[in-house]
Image (cartoon, rainbow, N blue to C red; front, top):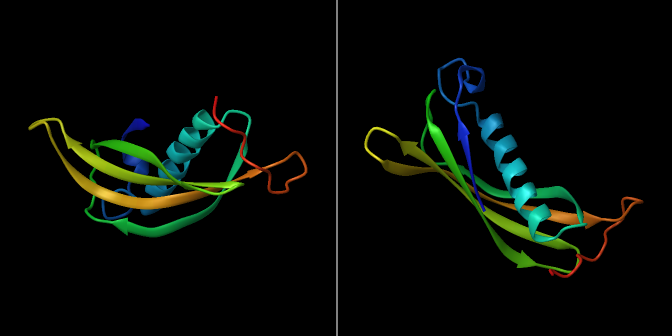
Length: 120
């Protein structure tokens, strides 16, 4: 799944670069949407982000492309590898700026781990 985000002034830290917490929030959101679309009816919660890697700084006005790809699955968990690219709209090129793997667990109505429903 792919998604895009425009970096606005309210997303910047006091040095004028994208605040890392915003990148983590957007990554969690995009990967949760991918998991929820892949497995309708599952109530996913985030349990881990592995090896968070900020590769390059991001400035205001950047357009970020988030790519979330499903990875390993267990009975109640699924992992998504997320890569983020910064698009340069002047040249049409893009640079890899961030990567991580997000792990989700499916919960039942009582908050206990639940088997992930098979895909239709």
